[in-house]
Image (cartoon, rainbow, N blue to C red; front, side, top):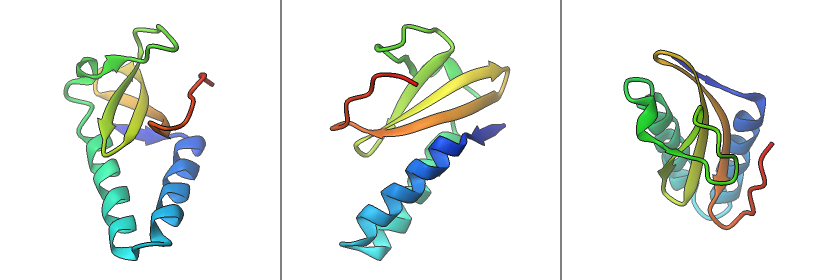
Length: 94
């Protein structure tokens, strides 16, 4: 099961709104692909790398396009998407 934090929902909306300025089609596609990637995490939650800035083995990340999808492993097959951060942004944690 995948749950999106309030922060992650805001990030998705911001990503959509930013891309939509140039292309409504690609805005929908990018957000859809990010959500699809997030939903693919639960069977193999340890496959993502540990977030270097946090050094917590339960907080990991995978990548889609130029975004870091940061998630927390809560239990077997249960994760929380904590944040979706563009590579160009300086991520200092929560």
